[in-house]
Length: 392
Image (cartoon, rainbow, N blue to C red; front, side, top):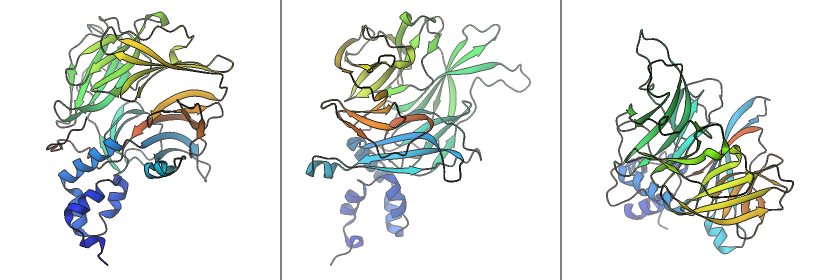
């Protein structure tokens, strides 16, 4: 009987390229020829393209008490078996809980997600240090200090983070981080809001020359953005009034901001009950009225892209007292949510069925992103040779 190691290299490449990165890390230890094959840039691109096409993973981050009674951050990697789903009416979801130990701090701090792209997660420690991390390969990169950081001997300026974003620029084949900062009591400053951009290939920050304050943009709903189709999206306000709300977008290639009007809904949803999510390659706007007795939720889809965007209501979810907060769309027709008991579940948009996710109950401070497992390195200056492949 022929052994796996006796197969032609072309066939081995085709088989291994469908495996997630954590499995490939173990396969590298089997024999030197496999290590050399898996580490080749062409193989890294092929495996990444396969993962982008499959889109079957989900990454949840929460905090819980471990067996020793200490609180720690946990990453749960969820995936489902497509082959099993094709053979049976039930799909099978698998979960693996892992503790990520950051080399920068001994204690396990709260680290929110600020973006995910191609297997790389962007997080921030204490909202000061920005970290790029590949959870599958355990590779970390701490980004340089801000380009607005005061030079030695100059007066210290207080600033607060207003918005973050991380994504891939297909125009330059590079990864970028955007950071929006609000400067407090800075005399002589033309605008209290400043924008900077980090580029992985140069490992440096640079200023983005735009005056958001003059454009009537004062507040963002939350720090993290939604990255979709070459652009970052935030819910934003020009003042403290909810009536002055809109969507702020930033094109990662052209480096331009746009204000987009949201859907015209009569639903009584607070600022913190409005979510931007990607659904089936379209930008979706989710409004949730948590004050309603039986919970009420609307999902709108952007029908036409642009400043004067057209929205179409996809569906209304009402009469379900269990659903609490939408987190992220998964697969093609399921919305991952937190229920009122603090558990994670998935809601099927077609059938209305609710299924629990195999994740241990969490305490608080949760995040969720669609995730794919890749070998993409976070080393600076490391551009992928795409050849005939496309990462969009």
